[in-house]
Length: 169
Image 1 (cartoon, one colour):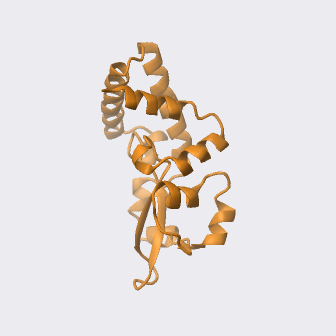
Image 2: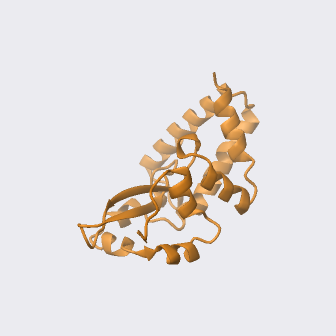
């Protein structure tokens, strides 16, 4: 029963280039992806409540808050310990050795540390000017140019099934 999860884990671990990641994120249905670098939501535009916009935001982190990767708090340690234990149990059930489990968790935290360095912390998100900071509108053409090798548009339309939009936030 755990084989599909192991196969999905192996596919993600085999990602070794931006091209392979682009293919995975852009062509794998969202429900079949076991990680998301970013999430989508369609909602009303922050500037015009009569129109809809596709929001693109960072994915979830193992320690929940980007600030925890710079300075671990007691709550962050609790999150890290609990999530490490959970991940360890799941990975062992999938047949990975103790050494493989430790390496996978270490790799995950190292990758998330890199991601967290460019993400807003929970404290930043609670500041009064947060909505102004994230109110970055892009036309479809602007987002195509800005997305680089990360397939934001392909993921939203092909993998997640969102409609083609002309405005993104």
